[in-house]
Length: 172
Image: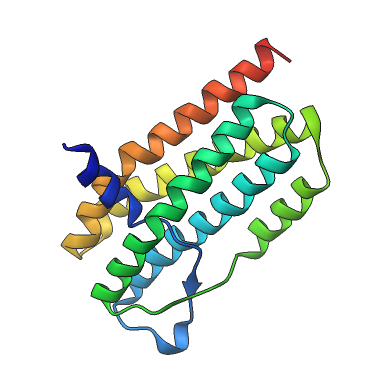
């Protein structure tokens, strides 16, 4: 698949917004899928920015910056998909993500690096599993195709996070 198409489809999953359910269009299922993606992108951007500030490891900083850049570039694509689906997005974060951001903001150095990479691995694993489950249950073909094309990119982020975590263990 051409790189730009793959990136564009992946990009649809990331923007720092959560739904305002009082003004939404689209089905509850579509709202749920887009909400999850929007929530995750905000977390990735915030944590990636924090990694750039708090990490002492070049690979961790680069991973964080990669997450920020990818997710910011992709935010426009998610907005387009939400518009097409009749979903209005508005800023917000889940409490558990806010807690993790707060926790990590108090760490620095090796402690930050280990915790950030552990969280990134767990978060990507959870997201990959959730999106795999949704493939079978999503009725909207646009959303289903988007998930199918998004999965390899999410899996790539997860694998990159594993590699960085491994490098921390072998080169402390």
